[in-house]
Image (cartoon, rainbow, N blue to C red; front, side):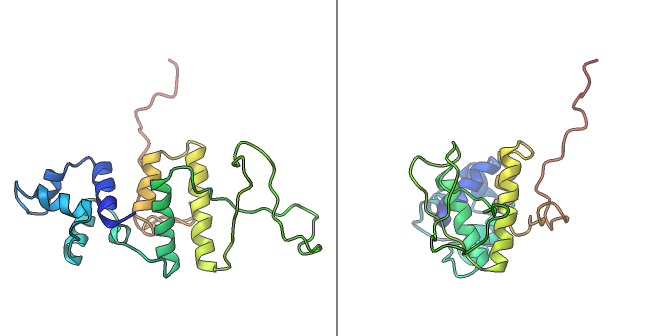
Length: 194
């Protein structure tokens, strides 16, 4: 996803229209055109303007930038936005070894899966990377995807985690992240029937 579409998606997520964002940036009441130019890709904001937009939209400035996938962090941003553009296209999971079966005991290089509703009708293709830092990032992504599927976090919390990652990185709940991304649970929810 290109920078302008990212700005538009997060602006909408935060509930601002173009005129409001233009006003917060100090462009005045006629500044909506500038935001339209940014979001359409006709014009890209300068670095300092992009950082200000990120602050106003409360997201990691790197989330808004166009990336090339040169390192693990950029690759994660590419994958996050691919998921936003094409919900359900990416299936993030951890391979699990079948207990008792040895690795590399046959010449068959295939990876097998159990036929169920979680897999497409055609045989999927996959790959793995032996990139320890990326492995850690992917493990956390799998963890939060499962939290979303289990209803532990909302779609909004999941998106918040992605647009502020790596500041929201919490090592799968084992540490406090640099930026809180979970919505506080309401204390007023009545858990009794009385």
